[in-house]
Length: 328
Image 1 (cartoon, rainbow, N blue to C red):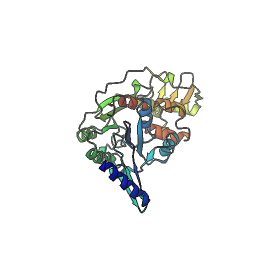
Image 2: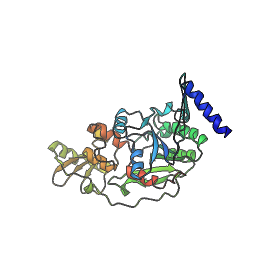
Image 3: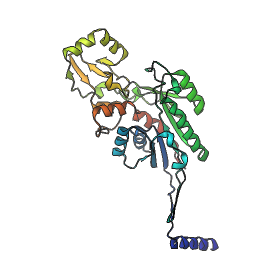
Image 4: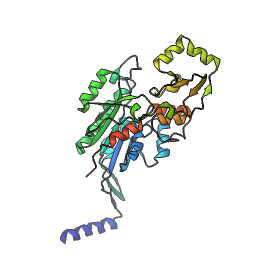
């Protein structure tokens, strides 16, 4: 009774002084932090997996990606450049002003990160690995994760990166303390996209093969290839493009791996036997990454291609997150 009276007295004093105290509501949902968030494929995956969350914090600097995320998920809390993030900014925030005291309790329960792959990718001839100016941002992601783990040692994490530089793969594995799981997006989509996933989410198995092919993706509104293009495809340069997978001669069951700059490299064009020539449409690009159709509609083709090629295959992430234990 004494304790109740004391608390009531404190509340009355605060009201007299015009000081407001706000506590975040505790429940069994989670708070998520996604670094290098891109199009917020992690957020789509959470929804697709039926996982509820309270707050979704995103670190991203590409304006077109942010525009797309905010257009689809306006409640996303954008944090900007990962190098400027300290966990105290999104953890326990105390804002003291003459008339306001605010305590926000935001533990992070799920940490997502797909750091830039430019130094790791097989397409990079220099093979700088994690010394590449963009790829070394992996260490910034680890810094933020370690800050979170001080407050919540049980936070679940998921890191993604490409196959490629073996030394970088070894360093990432040793730093995170878990072995990578290799999953190819071809199991859930019409895109051949092998990736490594490092996570402490337990019990993950390979997804079942859905048997999706390019026939399920193509809208078959192919353009007639002009003579110049046909000639190019049949000369030495064109043959190399076909050999490397930049240009596909159908029938072909799977698309090659989409990349951020693919639209600038004649990537993923298709020449059919009847002479028609097909550029992947924006909707087809979305299908290859298992995004919702129309998700990037606020972007033009080049902007969308860049962001989609940089993103995650949503159904792979949804599959991994489906093994996430429920919060108690």
